[in-house]
Length: 238
Ligand code: ADP
Ligand code: MG
Image (tube, rainbow, N blue to C red; front, side, top):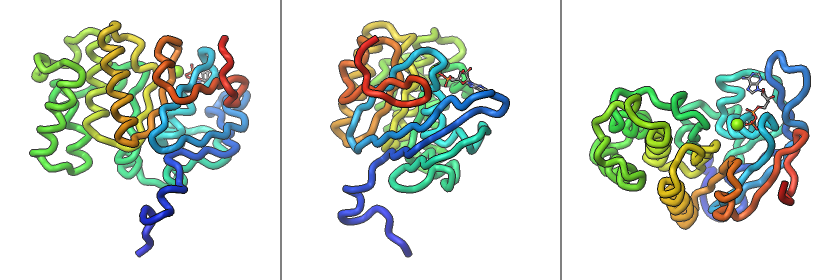
């Protein structure tokens, strides 16, 4: 048996390593990503900014393997999670390692109740029922939606749906968390609560990449990079 994650090697392997990544969707004329290089360390909060259409969501979808596993296109370069190429992972193995909250919670929520939505991920990861129950309680507490546990997510406001999507991802307890403008629809109180949660996940050595258009949310980031003309650059303000 080959041991991948033991001893000193784990210290050197980064959760996310991207080298010379090029990508274009089927049918798009030009490459959207044109030589992206990125290393994200364990316990780091990285913020990605960039104009609408610059490819931020595309990049997150590549990090979590939705591209090329589900959405196709032309992809070149290296994308590694913990030193292993994402394209070689099976989807359930990616789900154990990376959680993503999409820009639009309606694309994420499909269960009849908030509780089912939160339980879905851990159930698929074969987490014990008792532990799932604890995770549901903890996640509902973080997002302050205890009173909505048995509600249908469709009956909630946009901000509440976004909180359910975040709670569902938190319950999976993955080591890497990707947030695609996930705070956009939250009120100030909700934003602060999620930012505090992100900071506490950092303390647990989780790795977080957040795409943000609201500059006020960048204060929790260790580093901010801008995606421009298909490449990541140091962010120097607009
Ligand atoms: P951002 O998140 O920075 O706004 P996106 O990654 O969503 O940017 O989009 C980058 C570019 O790719 C845009 O020009 C967009 O129109 C295009 N695009 C996004 N998704 C698809 C898709 N599924 N098929 C074809 N083109 C797409
Ligand atoms: Mg986007």
